[in-house]
Image 1: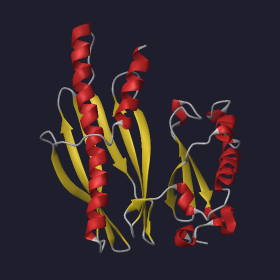
Image 2: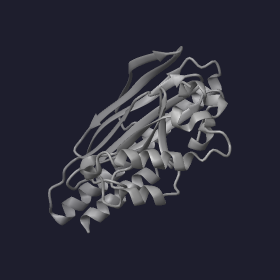
Image 3: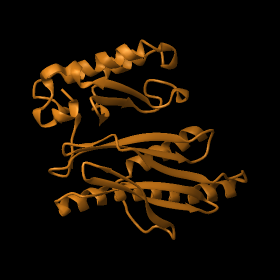
Image 4: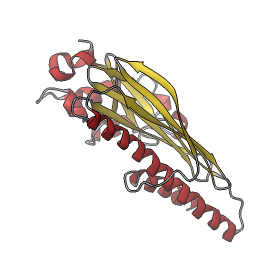
Length: 254
């Protein structure tokens, strides 16, 4: 029952990541880790904080170099808002958890909230950044989730996976076939019904872009146990042949 409650708290935190934004609670923020590609500079705003309730290490991407400052500011604000919403929710949960443990008379272990990211593509007006959220809110281990941002820098908006392909291209079946092919290479690390889960899924794919590949991934417990981690599947753009949307043809290296 306690495990279910903790898992619900975590899901709630992810669901509410776009709900509220507030101060930094006295934490120090600084810009570190500058990466430059194609004149678009990606810096990291890092927030570190610890007290009796929680330990935090939050890394937020900050982009510079876009000619359209309005788009640049909007993108940066969205990255920061997502991070601070997550941070604030876990902070609130940590204080609630502390009081609950105190009342029940059991030990309290400080919660954890970490955010990391990597820039997997930054060319041709397309920016792809998978952001990894980790939280520990009690129990045997923490939970990791990846939320990818695939942004068309011309318009400053996130693109969906369908936008990568020409209209009418059956990209979903192609992706499923490729995922199943890779599952069969290591069936022992997946759930027995992993292939059925992939075949029967009609959900939108979680993905990010890298040179020559689209990377599709599945969240913890969806097709494999916790020990197998978040499963990622690199799918070469070439398997889609001429089905790539011309706007993103350069990113496919075709």
